[in-house]
Image 1: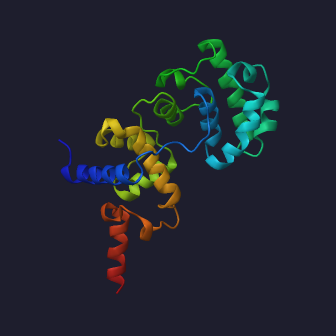
Image 2: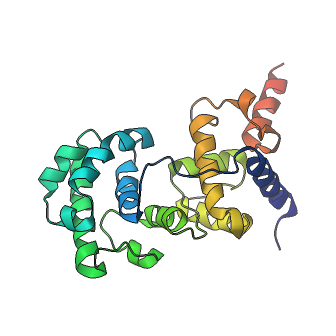
Image 3: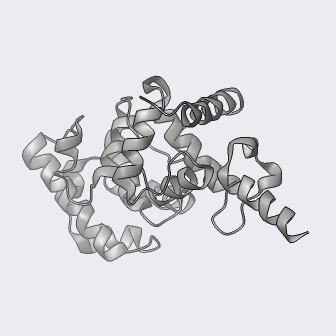
Length: 222
């Protein structure tokens, strides 16, 4: 049986963002699943803004998996050297493209297991692809989603991102699951900052565990 109090928190979260952010989506710029996959691999520990500045030239040179697979990690590096961890990412992009060409006919697979067979693609990236490229209900959990969900109180002391994912999937309605991922990311990016959350600008402070603890702490200090 679900915890009614927790479910009420989820319901309030969904109600707020359905009203104030109904069209939430990825801020990465892409035109097809291949470009999204490349962009998501590049976005690990890097901002979407930086990725979007880098990919136009990259996609002009490598418009498809075939052209990237026929290249080299050294050449790919020259296009992504401003991105974090360019050495590892250039090797992953080359490996990803080669597996796409050799095992999937150059087509990005539309299921979680096959996606995770690609170099540089873990569960989070695979879930992003399922949610964004293939419009399937999925909850990608990165460090930002992990942090924000725990701070609000949507999760309680989750040990890792997989545990967080399972909890969020359990409580969010399937119809909004993928959108809820973007809500959590965008809320963390623009309001609920890691070091200094802007509680005065937050529309869900009334359901936030962190805010309640903050107010209680201020009251005890008086």
